[in-house]
Image (cartoon, rainbow, N blue to C red):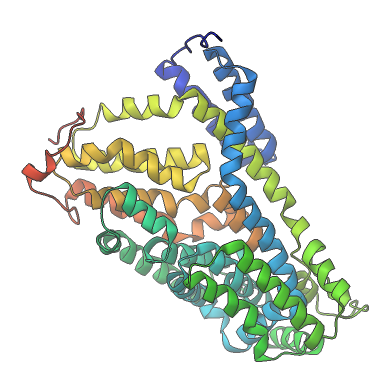
Length: 486
């Protein structure tokens, strides 16, 4: 009979704070101010946290198992990231994305590109329930339009991310929206209805910002008509455009609406795009597979691109499975830290201490926001960032006679839409890689994503938009809660 493992040391509050503080310090100083690579900074954070776990009494095998368990849960995300690279490469090969850019340059005025990007991605994400799908399809095309018009790409990327996560937050087809309602013990449509208190004002504020920016010179000088004409003409010469080129996009959007498996759906769209490229663009199967693996290059169509408008190769030469390898490395580094952190139990200790100082509704909302952002950043896991705060604060909301739909709304305000603004999370990496703009550059322009936090705090401390329940119903809980509302 094997003897049981010795008991593990319990972390003090200061030691529990150490890995989080260490990671934030490294990222803020190293990444934010010194422009160091984020991967080694995350590995240093993982090493610090692993050392803490070793001090607690965990073996190296325990630490590796915890990291592997985290990475195993991340594999669907990694597979999707890889497929997105193939999707972009093959859609450039077929002419699907250039076709959308071509129409965008012909129809959209530079002054309205930001508001158009925001509205279009909002509509697509509401209809499909997927932020990644809307950003990776119409979002990429809109970035091409912005590049052709000399609109700052950071502003355009912020508008795309804002619109993409507007739908991901309130669409009944969104998995995060459904998950938030489930973990907070409320119904889906009550949750969505309550989200409108923070989401609609954020949407209006973002729309105003994009409209003003487009008419004020904040976005810089717009492209001259001749330059736009040159790009449109070059794209028309390179590709044989036909409406059937939208078929891969239709396949992806149809599958998203019907909740079909994402990876087979994306691969099917890649196959259709390769066939369209062979039929309409007179390209070969080998070139299609090269675009799928290594990314599309304009020299596949024309060997002589020296006299071409410089923006066209910059727009078209992208995609491929291998283009996502650096992104996947970042995911591995982030989840190495998250796995070691989970093993130490540091997050539970920190949040338990936080619960002791809650005395009012405003403080409870603020604590929920802080905890959700902390879990999002520390675990790089959007679902965990909804689940952990919901489990920890659920009884606190009931004790204060607050409907749990306040909880579901708050964790979405601070989790779902904040995740793409953190450079090391899966969503942050995906958006930055897909749109070609660093997270910190697009962050100020992603108004829809962070504005809801301010509205949530205002509502919490004023009482506006806070749903309450009868005291008899609220006390129907077994778990004790430290704080009372003053």
